[in-house]
Amino acid sequence: SSPVVMAKKDMYVVKRDGWLETLDLDKITARLKELSYGLSSYHCDPLLVAHKVSARFHNGITTTQLDHLAAETAAAMSCDHPDYATLAARIAVSNLHKNTKKSFSET
Image (tube, rainbow, N blue to C red; front, side, top):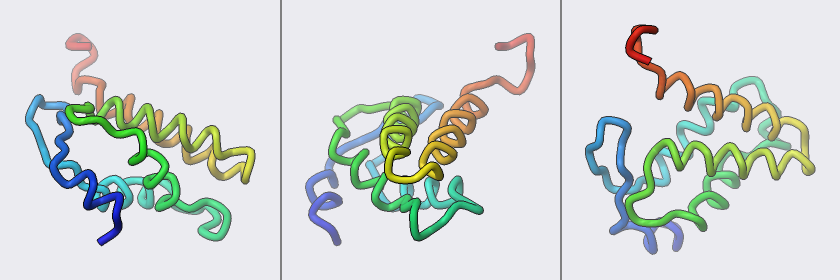
């Protein structure tokens, strides 16, 4: 287990439904990997984005805040390769979808 995961093991995130969940870097990495489909795995590393994001975690961070942080981090890394900009956009759009109610009238 990496030192980042060990240092963050007692931290919690607040899910969109209000429930608390133990912070899991593997879940964050898996989500970023899922959103990086079709991008160069050589130039765009979701694990690196997850590790950079983890350095800025705080206890009680919301999943929406995590998404904003991940999108900002990936966007900042677009100087390294443009695929990071695509990943940043996908994170932002995914976050909007997750925060949008199923019914337009509820939004």
